[in-house]
Amino acid sequence: MWPAHLMSSHLHTTLARSYGLFLLAISGIIACARSHYSGGGYDEEEARMFASGGYDEEEARMFASLSSVTYCVDTRVVADWTCTACRDSKTPLVPGKIKIIDAGWSNATRVLVGKLKDQKGCLVAFRGSDYRINWIRDLEIVRIVPSSFANCHGCKVHSGFYDIWKNIERDVVSALEEVGCSSGTNPDNILYITGHSLGAALTHLAMFTLKTAGFEIAKSYSFEAPRVGNKAFSEAFSDRFTRNFPVYRVTHAYDPVVHLPPENLGYVHVQTEVWYNSEGQYKICENVENRSCADRFWDVPALIALHSHDHCATPLVPNGDICNPPGCAANDLLV
Image (cartoon, rainbow, N blue to C red; front, side):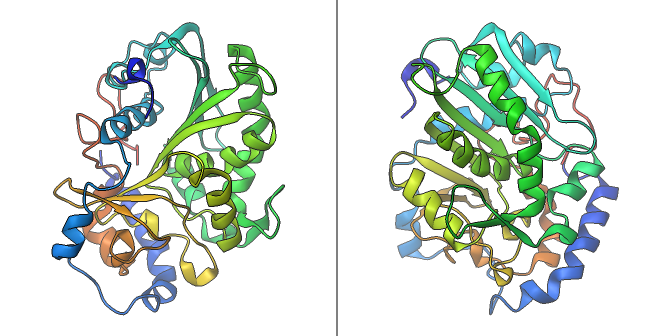
């Protein structure tokens, strides 16, 4: 558990159409991966698994609000940590030690780096897709061929996600040093990492790299992450992180993004999944690619047509929409 003192819209129509066309192009690959489409219910045995395990929902709410902060258009309320989502996170940061990294038009992401006020360490939060170009880069099919991942034997990861991370890695490390969380023997080298969508994919990649660079990863919650790498990457992730401290990958209802890139192309999710159904009940998913959790759904074109809003919808933030935090001059193209 994170220490007590740290407790504290939907797809634009045009965007949905573009994404729908992309999904239809690979629907044949995905459709053969499952034998049926479940309606989302669960039996008595599954019901007993809801709300089980060491998952801390209050802590997840804090991390969800921190991920939501990264979507603020008005960065002034982030820099002085007065935004609504900032307060909802119940996680105070040190004034003057908050850095916002906007990677630019081509790299399509934002990173929030901040020094924790009441304890050692720093927050690193990655934003998901923002404008249309970002969404294209989020799950671009033309770059789905995996690349070798450094410092991880046999690991392959999505080349598009990896290129984005490599392009911002130095900026993230520099920002951590500037706010007082340099690596090595520094007692503030402790990191809490979170992100949504594309930001969740970058969260999983960054954890590896920053750990290798001498940072201590204390805890991570990611939200609506696509698959990032192959089985070797997933297993190495568990060995390095999941088996040593709480790491949760939160999924929601019928979100289509968590089904991409497809398993048929060799991609495997990282653990540990926590799946929320449409009624807001959650289930700890003990196995990778657990077909009693998000993996029960397979018809991605149907999911995008009927449930694209589930990608941003979540019971873990007060307004139910992680992509559009209140009081932040939300952009109607956020996804």
